[in-house]
Image (cartoon, rainbow, N blue to C red; front, side, top):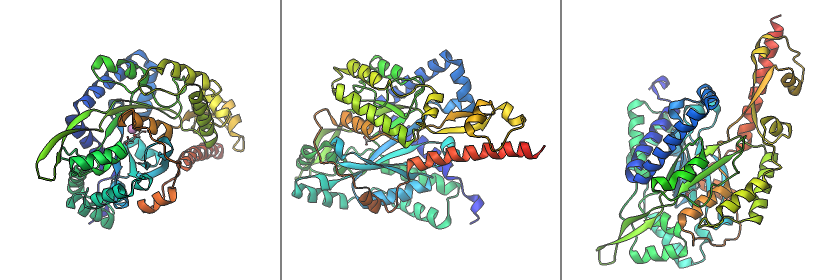
Length: 466
Ligand code: OOG
Ligand code: NI
């Protein structure tokens, strides 16, 4: 087959994310309600801020503003994780970052499968936060072995998904028909199963050990547990969820409301209690319930440098020493105030963030820079001061472990917090994954560096043309 008959991985990812959106909306009607609210708030925000509309028209396509930006799954074994990596690669999604959530009382470690490179992210930024259950953190050895045994018997990928993934690997891509089949087959892995694969007694034991273990081990597959569209005003959606009959989590995770948004802010509605059935030892099916699925929204800001990220982590820790957000929302206003106060030292202008080397920027020539003579050897600062070069924030494309833990906790039930000893194990995760995770900072630094080089190249060709 000729290579040019393959569809792009970006195209497969877009088709996959819209198929998943349709499936999840049908499975979880409350998620559809959240999307409606999000679309309303986005439309109102654009109408109230013409300058924002103009900026987004330049950089994004407006009709895709309210589309999903990410989802999440929880896997049970190394074999599932490494196959998932191969499946996501067919859609142009690669593991970026390592997140240890053990410190936050959640027995998983995770990565984000996402597109890398500016062009792919612009076409469709859909990512999947993917966690691997850590049975090594479970104290009860008998239960651990039973859980492993149960997980070893399931096959979360359809035969068709496996064949098409291998075909894509061998050929270097998929043609249009195969890509459509691949999307349909792969979607099956993310589907909800009303019938659990464990007995009611086993479910209870797993659930008593940790709700998350029950969620991962009890079902035929790693059902998608949430999807997350983008919002232009997260505070407005948070405030209005109750009007739409959905219960928001206690607080918005991440940095406070700011003029210049940094990193990532997220909130969700609380996971729903849904009917499931369990097969008892006598073969009869018994009704029960399971709580796992929810809907989330996100608002992204500038990617921070290691220095900026360290400052973010320090300020967040400082605010949480003053007020720890209570799961029931009773101190939400107090928490917000403490958070805003703690972040006062973080500059809230793009120039201020840039001057202190806290964030990554993309540089480009101004109209003046495109026509004027320039001294190629001039420093970036003086090119900016002379009005030849301008800078725009690079959007953060990754996740935040403290926020992710907050999302997990509020959706596992408020009594789920447990203490585990911090035990990050990136090496073990990468062995299980079958690849190294990419470093998020390298990605942003490379985009910034390429933009600077492009400015210099264009400036010097202006000079050379004289
Ligand atoms: C994943 C929670 C993390 C986020 O947005 O930080 C996450 C999960 O609950 O499985 O999706
Ligand atoms: Ni999420």
